[in-house]
Length: 247
Image (cartoon, rainbow, N blue to C red; front, side, top):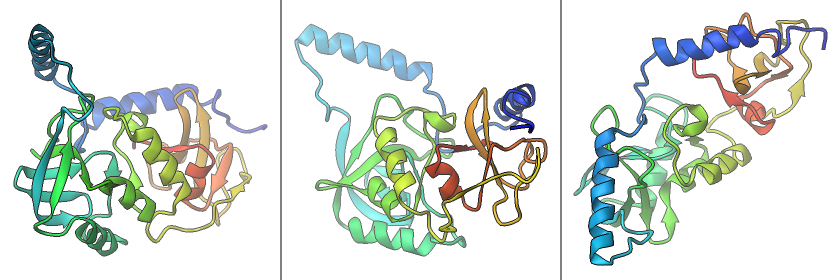
């Protein structure tokens, strides 16, 4: 393109990727499974095999009663505090917080019976002690409903966390549906120089060795990133195949 392309900034982006991994511990709901989980799983598998039992797809599913929702993606239950897997609802005092929480309360109100499913690919708890589960009520997947309404698909193997079985479906729906209060401009704009985007579309889309990544103004590597495309909204960047930078 006659610009600083992904090949030209690959070293910088590699350094950025390493910096993300080493300088910023993941204080998010997700991280790699611990060895204890693997060991316990092996023992269980051995015992089941010895007994001639075959675990079903629902082996990791229990029921619980809703005590109350903390926000759209966190709920207190008779089984403990649950953080929904693969979805990020708006935080308190941010755009969409009330809508997301109201939706979760409507889908699974206080006193209702929900199912909690624990995929083996995701660790049991997050860094704050919350249990990581899919939450369902009847045939309804609460996490998927939240994403379709405007919450984000997040915290999976595409952004450096544990892979979960529903992440492909969640990501697909995230691209199809607008985030809460997001800019609805989904178009791609041409850069105005090798390192700058137009004022109306300041999000940089870069195709580097680490994948197609979009960078927001203010992020650490934003200024040195050479964009192939520019966007006015994160939804636009995601629609064109880019994922968010980790820092």
